[in-house]
Length: 349
Ligand code: MRU
Image (cartoon, rainbow, N blue to C red):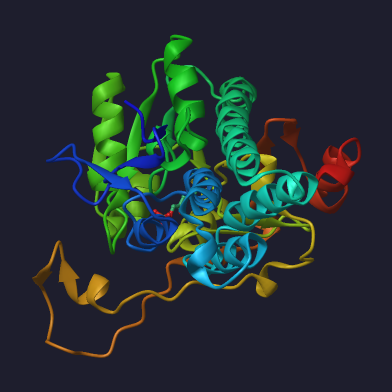
C-alpha cells in the first residue's frame, strides 16, 4: 500500500489518522494542504514527513503564478518555512527541504516548467533513496536479532512512518522473513496511539506474531515476558548519540538498561543532525492538550484540565547499545562512530 505518492500535479497521502478502521487518501493540490497534513499527523514518522515535505516543495513550484506579488524564489522560501514549522523535532523534514533548496539553487535560472520538473524529480529521488536505504538498514539490523526473539518496539516505525520499508519495524519484518520466529510486544503509545492503531495493523497485515500492551505494562513485560531486545526509531540523533523519539522512549530505555536488555535505535542517516552536539539542544514539539484529555475525540478527563503534551523525549546515548543506519551498525563511542559514518559523504549534508 502506497503511503505517499505523486499523481498528475498532486500529492496523495494515506490518511493515517483514520487507520486502522478506514483506508482513505487525501489529495493535496497546494503545499499548504501538505503542511496541514503533516501537522495533523495524516502523514507522520520522521522519514515519511521528510518525503512529504520534499513533494510539498515541488508542489509549491506548481502552485506558483506570476500574479502572486512575489518571485518564485520568495514563494518557495515561504513554502519551505511553512513546511518546516509544522513539526520541529523530526530533522528529516529540514534535511529534505535543504536538499530541495540545493536542487533549486542549481536550476533557478531555468524556465518555470523546468524548475517544476526539476523539483519533482528531486522529490521522487528523495523518496526512492529512502526506500533503498531502509532495506539496507533492515538487513544490518536483522543480523542482530536472535532466533525466537521477544522484541519490544515503540510507536510506529513501519512502512507508514517512512513511506518505504520501515526502520525498527523494517528490521523486525526482515528478521521475520529470515524465519527467525520473532514475537513483538507493541505498546499502544499514548496520546495518539500509533502503536495500537498503526503498528498492530502493520504487523497483523504482515502475519508477524504480536501482543498489544498499554504503555504502563512495560515494566511488567520486562519482568515477566522476557524481552531479548528493544528496537526503536528516532526523530533526531545528534553527534554524541543522544536521540529524540516518541514520548516514552526514554523511560523504555531506562527499563531496558535496568534489565540488561540490548537497546537499538534504527534510523537513516537523514535523521542524524551533526549540527547539534547534545540531546538537550533538540527542540521538542509540544502538541495540542486535547490529544491528552481525549482519546479519538472522546473526552476522558476533566474538560480544559491542565495538560503536558511533549510529542518526544530525549534518550541519552549511554542507554543505547547501537545505532543502525544504512551505513552499518554504529557502536559506542558514538561521537566517533557517527562522525566516521559521514566522513565519506560529509559534503552531501
Ligand atoms: O509523532 P509521530 O507519529 O510522527 O512520531 C513517530 C516516531 O516517534 C517514530 O518513532 C520516529 O519518527 C521514527 S519512525 C521511522
